[in-house]
Amino acid sequence: MDRSEATLLPVSGGSNEGGDQPPVPPRKWSPLFWAILKFMCLYHHQTVVPPKRICFGCSVDRFRKRSHGSNGASGNEERHDADMEPLLVRYEYKDLDTRLMDARRGTGEEGSPLLEQEGACPVCDTLWWNQDGVVEKYIEEEIGIGWWNHRGSGILSSLFLVGALTLVIIDIVNYMDQLWGRPDLILQLMRKTTLYVGLLLYPALVLSSKLRSLLPTSLHNFQWSSPLNVRFLIRRGQFLDIGRKGLPGKLMLFLFLVTPLIAALYRFLIFVVISQCVSDWSTVVTSLVGVIFGQWFGLLVYLLYFTRVSFQREFDLLLIYFRENEGDQTRCRGAFYTTVLDFDCFKQLVNLVIFVLLPLGIFSVSSNLTYEYMFADDACIEVDERNINVAHHTLRLAWMEILFMSCSFLAAVGGLQAEYVFDNFVIRLFHLRSGGHWIFWRSVMRDIAYVGDNHSHFLLVTTAFSFVSLFMAFNFANQDVADLAVCNDTLHVDLCV
Image 1 (cartoon, rainbow, N blue to C red):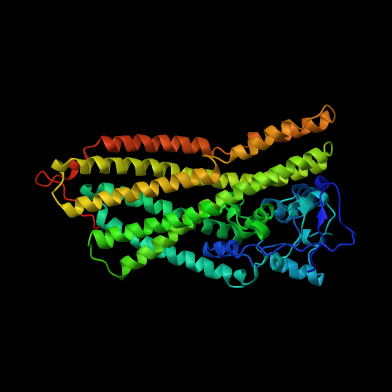
Image 2: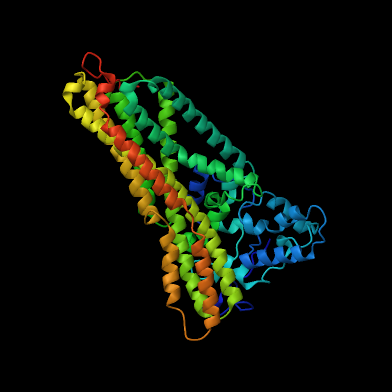
């Protein structure tokens, strides 16, 4: 497929169609970006840059035309779902490669979005905006994806995820067998459980995203998984000029990668060198898998940052688009909803992550504080300098991990929620209102109000769950943990478990 000629949007006030100078091809994106996606096991689809992108308005129009033209025959509902597929699962076409082959042979289904003429809708062209508001269409070879996404990438990444999860589950079963039902080890059970749940967050999210790609029409409510789709992330990268500037937030990426490595090295030193616990091959394998899971969490948080700054740039361009097309309700509404639909997926993912991390943080802080006070009371602990020394090191490590998880998330998202990004856009949009086009602006305000009324209730649920976690944590902290396992008036703690 030949690359289409790059054209300037109305926001830039001109076009180079038919100009004397040939369009400048996009630079290849940073190999680090593709390597990150590879390490995170995100590759799934064989085709990650579809030749045709459909805006919200065109998807709705096609659905309406098919609905009005149906004759009530059986199977129409199934046909309508297929017509709405570009809207409901914009990044999860499981049969995209087949459709492309059919389109090239001219045997595709009549009316298929991939067989529509390019450039028929100016709003669809906005889906190819780059960081300067230029319509810059590209293909996979031009941005340098190359061999990073080969034919077996999806299967290999899934197998690697399942294999890593299996090793961690085996380790969880082992420590549960050793710690479960022992009151003297309840604090270690709580600390290990919160750590493992936090580490398992990322692979669970990625496997859910891959499952939605396999069953797109059956998992419409899994929209929060779209930001972990390579197609979604590639479109986000359009607004960040990766070819010229590289990845954004390089220092943040460095810290998100190095901190889990330091924590993993510290953990290895504690349980192998300092504690002198007996270790075997399973300990080494578990340590290596722990390093990978820690890196995954750091990169997950970086992708949240990557996506957030991308949306901030896109909303800036959308403001210019509104200003230059004031009064054109069709264009502005189509571009608005197309952007908001993607942002809503990102917002749902952020809410889901905080829904898991906030209660985990409460339990982690509670168990660590209780651990601190317990070891501060020498009368309740069997005198063992090695255990005391190891306990102090594990507490430092636990606080380090808690601070990393909380601070990295807050820095990446810019707060507990991503909603402020959209709120800032709305505030600036209000300042664009002029005395004319009052019907147009009334419609815009109505659309914004509709989007606001459909905010996720994740914050309410998270807050309620967090209060329950806090209540349980305080009640646990009020218990005399040392007295739960008194053995000759002493508490013996086996830190090698």
